[in-house]
Image 1 (spheres, one colour):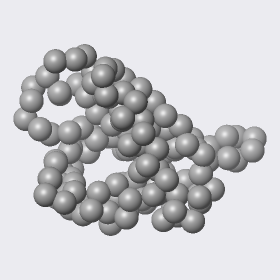
Image 2 (tube, one colour):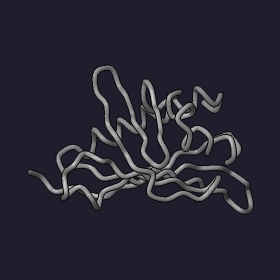
Image 3 (cartoon, helix red, strand yellow):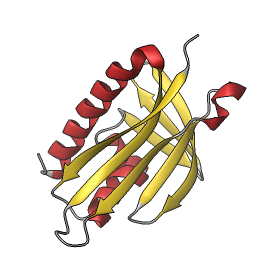
Length: 130
């Protein structure tokens, strides 16, 4: 089994932090670009793609700034791994960027970054920010 590595990728957006946050933090918003369907009960989110369903716990959030999820796949060693969406606004230019932090197996790093690239491309289309 290969070692998991932490990585971050940053994307520029032409959208307000408030609007962007809605697409990162709500089941309806996440269903538009991240998964085929998303349901939540409290802090537990269910992500559905075709025949696959994954659960994640919302472990921290700050409105219009960041949200962090942790996959709940029952494996104890995965307890330290999470993925996070962080919205940053440049104080001078007011440019908005989204920083995604995640973990990937050492040998799957390139695929993970490409997956995020594709997902963010979908999100930008939904927001009209492409």
